[in-house]
Length: 59
Image 1 (cartoon, rainbow, N blue to C red):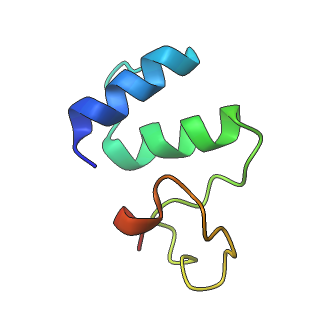
Image 2 (tube, helix red, strand yellow; image 1 turned 180 degrees about the horizontal axis):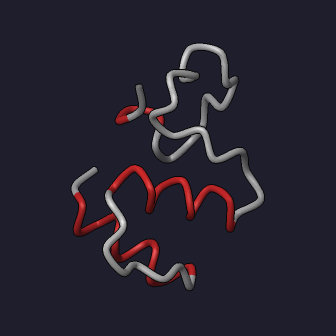
């Protein structure tokens, strides 16, 4: 997912964008949703979040 789409989702969720990088934005969105903020933390194989919106882009 491109950065502009992530920013749109963040804005819709009320996340302050500021100068956050893509990974930081996704993690803030995950946290806001009550999920583990695990995006790009190396846990994609073990996180168990198969239906995660960010799954295809995660490492």
